[in-house]
Length: 183
Image (cartoon, rainbow, N blue to C red):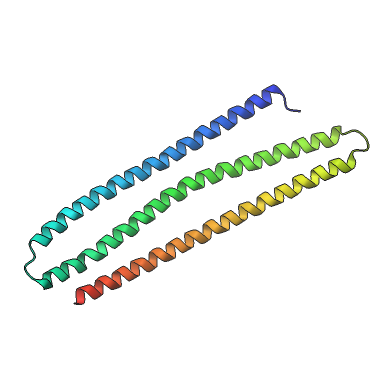
């Protein structure tokens, strides 16, 4: 059985984990706010520069060249923003995953110790109940490991897809920009 000191220590550890995760979440939000402020400033500066450039245009050919010149930088900045936002989300998520995995391992160890304690102190004739309990714990551990592997594989696949889409979009933008400049 758990003692009062063990329960108190467990609650303290859980609170420390909660506050640590809350701190990491706020750090992620701060990074996103900083990213959005920087992006907003850049958009404002680009809009100002583009407006000034538009006001100096003398003919349709200059307009077409200016439009073609604006397309690629906008797409590149959007792609960079997406990558940066993705990196922030990924790093924050990684921190949460590490804590979740550590807590899951800790819980598995605690349950394992509890099952061992119960099996050692079980009355005679309760072997089948103890065996069922051990089997249930083993099955639960296997299920948890399978879920963790599936989540990791899904995350890796999503990351690969994100990078592939980003590369494709960057290539398409460069091609569209090059085509626009040729006109």
